[in-house]
Every structure is written in structure tokens, then in C-alpha cells.
Image 1 (cartoon, chains in turn cyan, orange):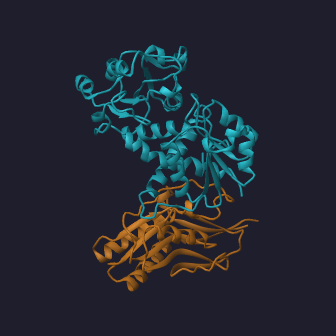
Image 2 (cartoon, helix red, strand yellow):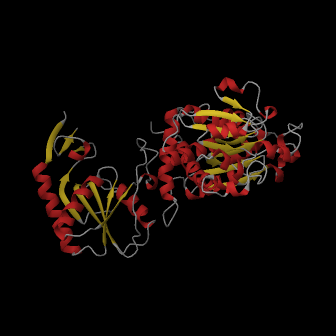
Length: 309
Length: 179
């Protein structure tokens, strides 16, 4: 396989194992490019990419923007808070207005699940989902899996615990799809109120005790408590959550196993993870950010192959 | 009708690579400021052969690297889609004489993209080009080899088939196929 089969990257659910492998292999090449004195290739110099963010983002937006610049693409940035969306413009009208300015690819984040899918169906340009509500965040899952593969050599049969707010997490869903496809065993751990009822149908283990989860896993992917998405109180207080589900040195010392710690960011230090663990040698948090650029370069490069000039 | 004629066999290839090595040594003496860069996919096999011979003659290590030009190509969307291969240049080329090594020189576009790629590793003093086969009169851009194993006249529809021991073939054979 030498190119992706679809014009868009909307979710991990639609990707084949071969496509994921191709993205990883291409990311290896771009990771080398990022080590060069001049960290730039001209591959996408004929393309214009719009970063359309209807929801806040630091890491993902920066990472996409840097990846686009490293590929020599022209870029425009759009954020809904400073736009005519506030005046009542529809999503498709906004996108079509951007496209008519000869944009070839759209990177889109939206609070509503399925919004990028709707846009992708209605336009010819490639759409990359940079997070749609509580649905999927495919580039994050790919960079997480890539980082695990880089660290452990393989993903097959590795035990990966996803810990925290599963209900409100698009990272969790995309990670489950990606890691399952690559042959990992998955355990979800968190308070019952934050684990969706029917999620076990995805063939994942469920655990409500953090100590048991950490005893079981090779990798702990710790998620942020998404206070902005939580309507009702799913747990009494952050302090109580931290006491029962927070990862700290004391807990890891007690378990006494070499576990890799990951976090998609932004971290609530002292809530889901303590500072000493986030900054420890076991933490791959900064590797994830570094690999994010290479993974996003690979995805945009591969999608651009589908578009003849 | 297809016609297939042999350009190189084992013996001929060995002699030609020997000659190219000696031409390189004549111009670059002890290789103090000279590095060899082989182009993916098949230039890297000739790089290895040339490197081994030169190390044997000079009795010292020389700097070599491999370069994949996919990301620098101007035609990567219009031809069959190439899968990017490994690039490994573990040094800066600032003030070095860089010798690009490839198997066949045809339109010159690969070499142009290779020069772009090399410039991302510093500013070389000089860039030279070594190719085993130069397909004359088929250039799209004005690029000529500094060292050349064999010059041949071809038309665009001709193809060069390179089978090397490194690719798993029993013996080295290089053919030209006339369509």
C-alpha cells in the first residue's frame, strides 16, 4: 500500500491496518526530516490548507500549523470566536466561502460529533478531523500509537490502560479503535459515571480501581478531566477524583512496575497526574507532542497524493 | 517487438566500478573533505560498492550517506506514487565536496531534487554526479554527470533494467529494453 484510500481522515474507525502502517512508516521519514539543519521539505508547496477551529486548541492547532509549514504549504487560520459564525453563518456556508478562495485541504475541529463528516461529504477538498465533540480525534490516536510503538517496539499484545474521563473523551474512542486494530489489549479505568454503559461492546476491559489497572498495564494513557463538557457532576469533587484516580509517585512506588505514562494534554497537574510523574523518565508526554508533528506531516502528505494538480 | 540487450554483466560492472573509483581518487585524493551520497532506491547499492573499494585502497573510513528524494520531487503526484524511503546523512555537508551516486541518469529530475535535498544538510563546497549509465539526449533539465560508467543513446520508451546481487538476484545484470 502506497497511499490512503479515502480523500479524508475523519476517524480511525475507517482506517485499515495497512493504512495505519503506511502513516507510521511515512512519519518515520518525516521524523528524520525534523532532525535536519533545515527542517523543511517542499512537498506541499502547491497546496493551501485551512485550519478551521470551532473549538479551542493549543497543541493540536500548533502541531498542525507547524507540520504544514514544514511541508511548505500555504495556510490560513480560522477560529469561530472571531468570525461570522457569530453572526449566524451556517457551517457549510463558512466552509464554502473558505474553499472558493482555492483551499485544497481543511483541518477541522468542531464541538459537534460528525461535523467534519458532514463537511467532507459536501466538498471536494480533503478534510482532516482534528477532533469532533466527544466522537473521534484520529491524529491524536495515531501519534499515541506511534509513540507507544516507538518506545515498546510493537503494539501487538501490549496492555494499555486508558484512565480517566472516558465518556467525554474523543481521544479515548480513537485510541481504542487504533490500538485494537494494532492488536493491543485495552482496559478502561475510571469512576463508573465516566465510563459509557455499552463501551465493553468494543471488546475492552473495564476496571474501577486504579491500582488494579496499573498492576495490569504496560502503558497508562491518562486523560484529562474535561470539566467543560461535563453537564452534571459525575464525581463529588476534583480532590476526591484525584484521591481515587490520580496517578502519583506513591501509587507507582507501591505497584513497583515499570509503566509508561502518557497524556494527550493539556495536563491538570495534581488532578489526574502529579507533577513528579508527568516530568519523570517514565513519561512520554513530550515525546507525544514531538511525534505529533511528524504524524500530521505524514497524514497531510499522504492525503495530498490523492489530489492530482 | 521487445528487444533486450545486455549492457553489463558481473565482470564488466566490476571493471567499470573500479575505473570510477580510480577517477574519484584522482580528483579527491584522500577523501578528507569529500563525502559520497547514494540515492534511493538503487544508487545506494553502487554507493556501497564504491565505498568498499575506496576504503580498501585508502585504508581508512570515508563519510557516506543515503538520500531519498521523494519529498523534493516535482513529479511525485503525476507518476506512480513512490513510497518514501530512508534518508540517513549523519553529518553536515558544509564545505564538503559531495558526490551524488545513482544508477541511471535519465531526465535529470531526480538529481535536481537530490541537490535540493542535500542543501538541507548545509552548504556544500561542490557537488559532483556519478552515474553508472547516462541515457544521452533525454534530459529535461541541464544536468550532466561528472563521472559516468557508460553512455548510451535511448529513446523515451526504452527502459533500463537493473538486477543486482544486493536485490537478491543470482548475479549482476543490466539490460536495455527497446519497445
